[in-house]
Length: 157
Image (tube, rainbow, N blue to C red):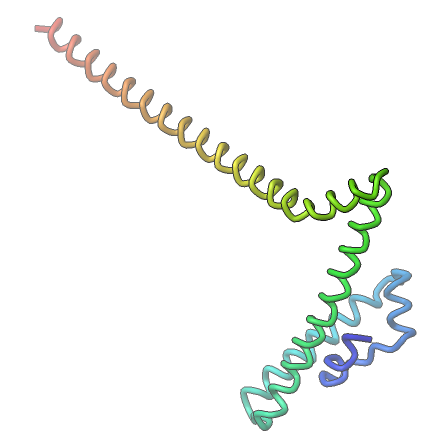
């Protein structure tokens, strides 16, 4: 549905029968569509290199692809927000609590991001500390070897 304009421009047939076979995971159908897409893109790249179509046709395919991705993103965000609201309604017993949870959702998300960032920074700091310790131990071992060599020379004299 949203991919059809872009696929039509590439001469790839993705009708309801093929879409249904992909959804029921019929073996080989998705592979065939991906292969057709690969061949069509290779041919398009070759044709762009040899005889370039008018600029308007090339940008038309790009605009169709970009608008398709934007169209896909909007329903996903809307669905995500609806799911979040439903989860809040299920968990909240009081209407004020529901409103407050909804208001605080962006701050809660920010808190999770900051917690993740702090954890990653802590791991990086621990790794740096371990590396510094390993370097210090290596330097001490090297000095110990030099001291032993000096002692052996001194005792030999």
